[in-house]
Image (tube, rainbow, N blue to C red; front, side, top):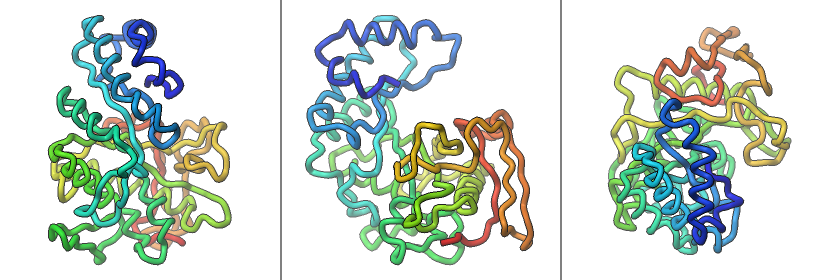
Length: 306
């Protein structure tokens, strides 16, 4: 990933883009299977307007560098968080924030290069903002009888994850790009939190990860109501590094202690009322068709714990 810190410099310096690709991509390609190259991570959420405007020009520079080195099968993209949206609950009314003028040229670039819009989707944070209005189980892929019908389209939703993804699809449609391809760059759930962070516990984190994997690795995995193709997802936040702190957006993500090699989690409640133990390795779960940073723990299939 091209770091956020050099995004402002790349648009005016093709040599910098060439040097970055020469140092970070060319030595490993094609021996290493590199399919996508992200230019920054959530730069819209973490920097000012000047950097936003430099994002797409930086993506173009990196794409030009890849072509110069005859690296033609690597798609260029960037990751965005859900805070780029002005609204995110009912998908059909979804639209991007008016102050983020970069979204239209970004979608144009992605559409022209046949790349993906990489989303970081964390249903927990949307639920935590309105815990009394959104059913907890809808955030855990554990809602069996509760549905939300979008009155604008008639589409029926069984989980908050799908609502959030479709909101981006409808927002992109309003800018003229209804067929933008979506890749879920990050998803996960905090396994702990500060005293005021309801629902942030290891039981819910394990349930979210397990149910997400079950949904995404079925024989015929389905996308969302507005994007019914097979989902492309990278499960993140199953290990917390030393740089995260309580109160950080990225803190307490997942169910694995730092640098642990296996998942060993015995939740207090399970399908049978007793403990459920599950062990997994990164190699084992990657073979099931989902990309991982490390590994996830199992949990019960019942309701969440507030």
